[in-house]
Length: 276
Ligand SMILES: Cc1ncc(COP(=O)(O)O)c(C=O)c1O
Image (cartoon, rainbow, N blue to C red; front, side, top):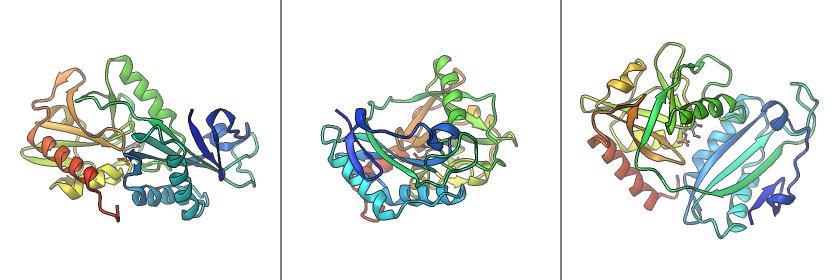
């Protein structure tokens, strides 16, 4: 039975109650993080909490104190000892409010929950989204609970038999996946879109940039299908080789740069420094 942490209290998931007027539910007004738990320990927790605070500040929400968030994470992991390999979701919404877009005056809702993580696939088939990411929109690069665009486009890719969809941005450049960042290998060099392309500052993306010689540069969306090799990164999928783009095989899967990134990232997971 899954136990969740809601506003300071642990309870069975079936007993946890969130107001029907919560603005996270009503208008998607909130922020979140998905944190990977390996062998009962949260990976890169500091980076995730930093990003949660940045996302909250950007949408004008007061983030709960850091200590409370750390406590929520520690307590929900301890309360679910049967799921040591987990996806931990930390959500902060603006709390209950009116049935319109104007925010209420009540305290935020803070929720931590865990779920088992499915085994990783060896590679992904990706589809290029016909809908662009708006790199100029107010939510670009933020991890807010307004994720219907990602849910819809991922469902579209899955209907085509894909595992992930990759967005271009309004400029026609490579941006990111619905829940991943993207890297392409071209002429022996790894390239990933810069944050100005509208992608999320992925925790995995940052770590992979540090672990490899990857550079941040804009590329046209066609660079994905033309790449020698390519991969996506994310908390759930780690470093995931791309096997096909719109049904056409990528030249190498996994290519040498992808395999090296995968190996370096797995070594980091096995031995994470304390400051991560
Ligand atoms: C839109 C989007 N881009 C990229 C990522 C990858 O970020 P991270 O490596 O922090 O999981 C995510 C992950 O949740 C995401 O939702």
